[in-house]
Amino acid sequence: MRPLQSTSGLARYTVPAALAVGLFAGGCTQSHTFVLRPVTMPTRLMSTSIVVAPSTVGVTPAIQTLFEKKLAEKLRPEAMVQAGAAGDLVIQYRFVLYDTGNTAARIGSGVANLAGSPFFGIGDGSLGIEATYSDSMGNILGQIVVDGPISGAFASAEGGLDSAATSIAKYAKANFVAGKVQECAAAASSGSDLAVR
Image (cartoon, rainbow, N blue to C red; front, side, top):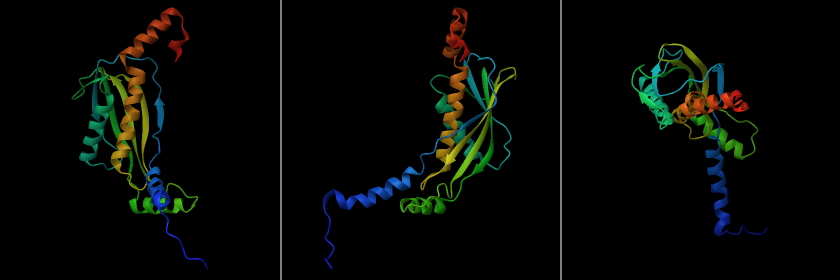
């Protein structure tokens, strides 16, 4: 039997690098947006307010504050965010799901996946946030639910909040930003199919 030879250079870093990539890559899950009430008429966005509604699950005030901060950051610079319900667009949100999952199970699953395990998502968590968009008069303009996945060995609720805030802000920008409305109005008057988008 031949003795094991020591490896040098790049070869000895291959296994640790593969382990690190496998553990971190598990957190690469995208958020999903579910439209409950589609936008029927784009509305010009001048200012935006973020308002919390009573959640259907237990969420701490610290989590709500962190989410509002992330959502305000994602809305800028296109939207001027105001305190209270004074904005032209009011985004009212509530948590409808909040499950942080199990970190130990996610780490174990990440290691098992490196060994070829076909089971993915063990220990993952998720959060769900319902967002209702309305004008300053209280007329509902649209409503969505987004999820914020908490997956991967070192995932946290903060990552899920960030994903959810990104999705809610992206939907607002796509449907309520002044430039988009003006573009659609110009296209409609010219007969372009852009107004249908």
